Image (cartoon, rainbow, N blue to C red; front, side, top):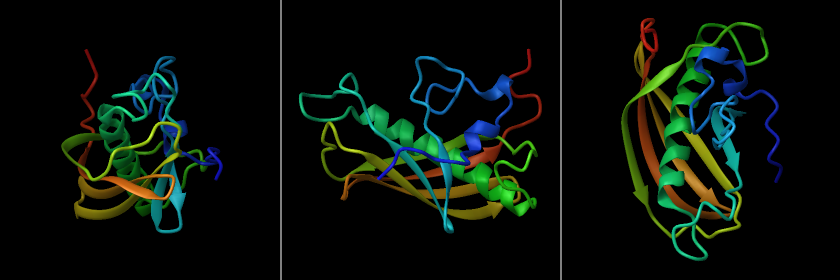
Length: 160
């Protein structure tokens, strides 16, 4: 499995909103999660480094929660962008989402060295509110599930 995602929604975010520690392409110290379509579901692939450790041999749960969070808001952005008639790479600026709620369930320890794959299923619950159910696999093992409710970022958000 490759870590290359061709048309990630995070690549389309304007520079002012590309600083998230989880998915911001401009944050040098961040994870750089990238979310894209895979059929009717969304996918984010990530290979944790040795520094993302909880205890020897296992990935820190905070990284898993961040993956679910950013994958959820990125998935919501993909869904609304598509609903608006656009796809990543079309040149149209996508909507941005912020997290209204995040629920994470850890099902199995996440082994260090495994490729993580977050898969999202999206449901619109309001024109400005979307729910994404996420499953996180370490190689082929389901390690965590989560639910993100994202809301369209208010226009004044981030303005001083």
